[in-house]
Length: 254
Ligand SMILES: O=P(O)(O)OC[C@H]1O[C@H](O[C@H]2O[C@H](CO)[C@@H](O)[C@H](O)[C@H]2O)[C@H](O)[C@@H](O)[C@@H]1O
Picture 1 (tube, helix red, strand yellow):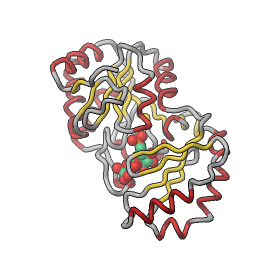
Picture 2 (cartoon, helix red, strand yellow; picture 1 turned 90 degrees about the vertical axis):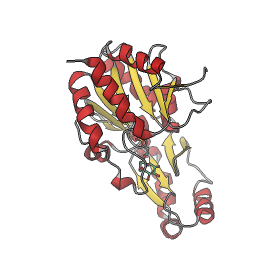
Picture 3 (spheres, rainbow, N blue to C red; picture 1 turned 45 degrees about the horizontal axis):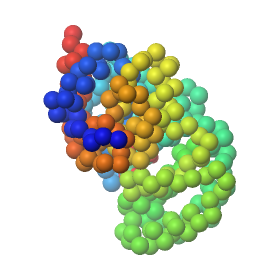
Picture 4 (cartoon, rainbow, N blue to C red; picture 1 turned 30 degrees about the horizontal axis):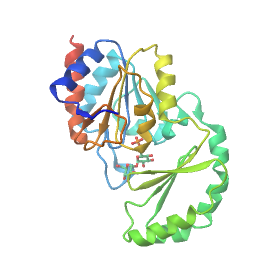
């Protein structure tokens, strides 16, 4: 793993320009990458100034969204129509729906959640059941100690195949046999016949894409440089993404 470079450095801009001219697959995570992180998940949106840039890019290249959200949820927040969407951290394809085995494997965990609804809500912990994965949100909890205790108890006995992954003020409950974002990216590269790719993400669920990227892909982690990330480039903050999109549009020319 080598030191990450800033994507808007001269070297980063050159790599981006070179990539865009090779008809790559452009893939973006949503929360924290296209949309700023906000307190309430239901208020997240692509900033208006980025929408025309994304619209132009999606008209010129295959442009896909790989998100932890459900497909129908993210679709209404984008403000433009991407070529394809994969949701649920890789486990829900726009055309094929959620991974049925994952939905089924989560049934016993769902029952554990149901039995603790009152304790969770008293602690300000909000459950987002997305079918093929479940998010346990604690950003809005007024008492982090109480929230942690309730979540720890909920996670004490995990059903077979169920695993947990930390995210941004959220615990993701996933199924180990379900496809992740890395699987989704490789599947979409094949589907759209692309030999090179761009991927931007900001969280733990994006690392499988960074880790399994081919040598000539441009991979970007949104957030201060993190030495243990497998992304090749970084952006200091989400607001810089608009400049990246503009650079791509400029590189495509007319
Ligand atoms: O893979 P992503 O597109 O980045 O989705 C990851 C999760 O995003 C959402 O939660 C996160 O963003 C919220 C809005 O900014 C924030 O309030 C929350 O604390 C974050 O964890 C979404 O609600 C989840 O379903 C996604 O898995």
